[in-house]
Length: 193
Image 1: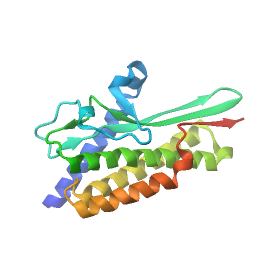
Image 2: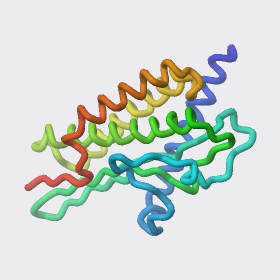
Image 3: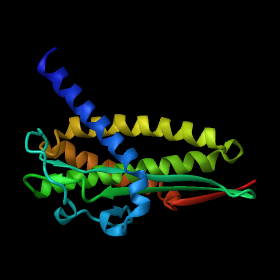
Image 4: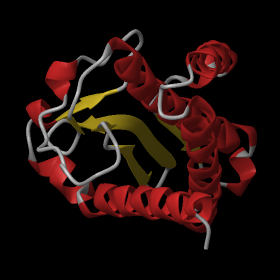
């Protein structure tokens, strides 16, 4: 394998490990106070103070944002309630060398997560007759795959914040997408049975 394929494989593997960590710590969220994580809330801006994890010195990355979705499906008999929140894990996010450009890049990851949470909420709201636990799980997996793909594109095209022109292009696109899906910002949605 050439170096490009090896690096792409390593980035994909690291990203997959991040997703596994988010899933493993889903129950952790429900048992700890809010100082362990931050929910996405407009106009929340990340600060380097939020990156309290221990850097992995041998990592090729200068920073890692552990971001995921707090999600749940509640069948309350007379209605179905779906909760989807974008969450930033403070203790598992870290930075080696903080710079303004890198912080804007990490903010982009957080904002992209919120966009995909909104897209998932939109999917459910656009298909109220399809709502079931199976549909919920299936749509979540589809959206997670899309999110994984766009995150890799984001990192590759911006060269992890080093390509300032493409970083600005992504920042502009992310702002447009957040606005496009602003009607889906409510973190809890309800469906009558």
